[in-house]
Length: 183
Image (cartoon, rainbow, N blue to C red; front, side, top):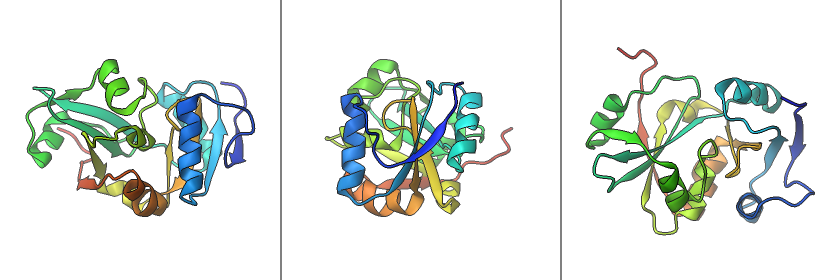
């Protein structure tokens, strides 16, 4: 991975349209953020390198769907925490969950695999995606997430996400409790 540097705010160079919309949304809400630009971070190892520069954990973002593909969920959880669909399915009262397809990611959040983040909810105008957040994330001062592309990562105050960003995107979070120890 090439050298990663930390910046404040929007990049000076032009970016793809959906990434630029993320910066415009954050600025319009008065949400300050730091940004690290990097090679495509599509592995946990690459994300750990970015985390060192950002000084915060990049949360794991999973787009899930029920067996009938009638319900879609965006789950935010600590990056290194193991995930078991059975545990989450029981908590939210859903039929067995599976990972959404690349087509579903594009359809619901205008995001490609590896770039899923809470910022993608700005593209869910019909509120078809239900946001689930592991309670543990709320204890972190900052959350690291991609601006709809995984060649940049943003460091945003958790309180700004919960109190400013989610209301502006007209989404509410349902809190879940996922264990570290999985049988």
